[in-house]
Amino acid sequence: MTDFKTLVQTRRSHRKFSEKPLDGEDVRLILRAGLMAPTSKSTRAWHFIVVEDKTDLEKLSDAKDLGGTFIKNAPLAIVVTASPYESDCWIEDCSIAAISMQYQAEELGIGSCWAQMDKRGLSDGTSANEVIRGILDIPEEQHILCVLAFGFATDERKPQNEDRLKWENVHIGKF
Ligand SMILES: Cc1cc2nc3c(=O)[nH]c(=O)nc-3n(C[C@H](O)[C@H](O)[C@H](O)COP(=O)(O)O)c2cc1C
Image (cartoon, rainbow, N blue to C red; front, side, top):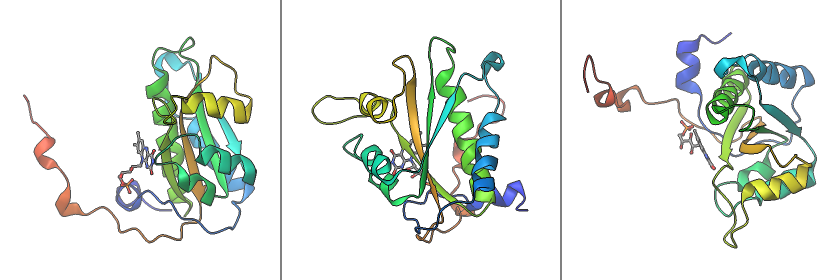
């Protein structure tokens, strides 16, 4: 098992994946990490939609104009949604669950990348949320924060460079 100190350094965003499918138990562990994530007032209002269908992955890739094309390269994606009516901290809750799933994947040797969907869309004004709701039959009240792509990475990424950390953004005592 990778210790957390190493995990936070080696986790990088991966956008190219082999065709090898993910093991079912690994997928369960990734979802488990999301389901164990802390939430405001313990609402646990998020939903995670697992997508493996090639056609749906391609459609998700096209849900916004920029920055989502890598989704179709992945064997699996998890769409992270929640209802703002159930939690006023839905963005925070979904974000924490998403990164928890990404770290769990990394620990299992599975690469991932976040594709932002909230506040993103197509040049004709259609929101990515509208597009994705249509693809996956997601109810209207659910807001889609992001799509996480998972797979065995084929793009080599270097670990975080210890010398480039923005320690100047850390303030001790006062700003
Ligand atoms: C809130 C958020 C939104 C992101 N949206 C996208 C995205 O839409 N497309 C993409 O390719 N990467 C996206 N990323 C990944 C970032 O580009 C990536 O984390 C950043 O460049 C740092 O690289 P690293 O993850 O390899 O350390 C997003 C990451 C976060 C945290």
